Length: 112
Length: 113
Image (cartoon, each protein chain N blue to C red):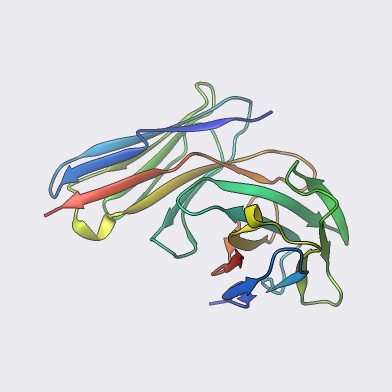
């Protein structure tokens, strides 16, 4: 059974600082997704990573995928308060309908 | 921009009652999913649906749960006899193909009392 783990579970950081969220998964997959969730809201797609070595950047966020290490990272550069949210990685299970298995989530709090 | 829509946004029901949660996926999408999220916790897979049938279901998706795609647009989740522990946010999602990410609806908050 595919297991997806994120760390840290909770991250409090000051504006302007850099940090990385890690997503490890247990079985082979070359498709991984990052989502953002604001409190009480839906899941907003941030990045789609479809191959080993894939790197995507949007604003202050950059995501990468290493399928050999079964690891994805979400790097935050010069954090701002608006980035405060919960971030989930999700791994494609490569089954018949390719369900997504979600990580535990990382709650990010950016303080002023 | 096309979006997945869910109704109702919030439903309160008594334990033992049946509920139907409704979803309209994005029109050219082929894969449909239901997930749930208990407050502040992980997003849990319930069921996937492709080619007019269930592709996969989780252990949570027992005989009390069913899904239907009664016409070309709606995708419903029925819980026959709700329990207190069914209280959660239920998300519908759809994707165009397996090389694209899934798009999620705004969710239905189900409260069982």
